[in-house]
Image 1 (cartoon, helix red, strand yellow):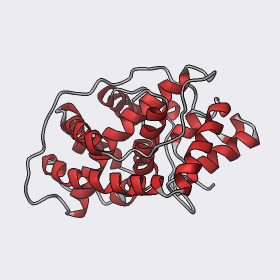
Image 2 (cartoon, helix red, strand yellow; image 1 turned 90 degrees about the vertical axis):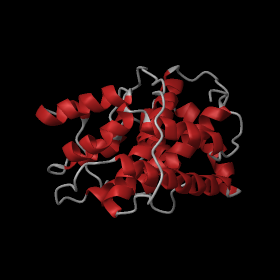
Image 3 (cartoon, helix red, strand yellow; image 1 turned 45 degrees about the vertical axis):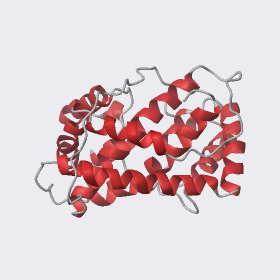
Length: 262
């Protein structure tokens, strides 16, 4: 698939961008900078503004409190058992990392989009809570097409269509991070195919995305940053919410539940 959202690779980041990436990793509590932040780094002034706007939401436990509420009511489609087999231990590290980072980013970035769209809730006070424990785990490399066989890359692309058809805009990083475990990905593909076929996967993704954005509109009241420079921040961030992050929050959680890990 073509990549409409260019990004700065973490290893290639220098200067101010490298400093911001380090701060994002430390603040979010994971070892990988989410693709949405790396995409914003390609636009002049976008990453410094966006990160300064939402960093307090992480530091003050606002997004953590939102995640706690969300997980009490989120819809998790039932998948066939994915109980641990012979796959590498890194599989669960990847799933734990993305389950954490995608979900808290869903609320921080949702609040950012609501602020940029002028859709901040008219009332309500964002709740604060204790920070969620972040899984500080070593992750396998983020694979590109040339790093794996054509059959494995084709499977990564097929997986990316679940919950985001017919033409996904963004290739979800989690599948690339799991490309070194093709046996596990084949099991995931079979499980997701069943949930896609009966409609439960799409229904859960849509419902969870809408529920999260409703909360995010209240969280947006805590963003005090002035309007950003004239770059397309809203369109880029919204695309990630509507596609990669918006679907993977539900998919990753469902996979972890099917493994008995959540």
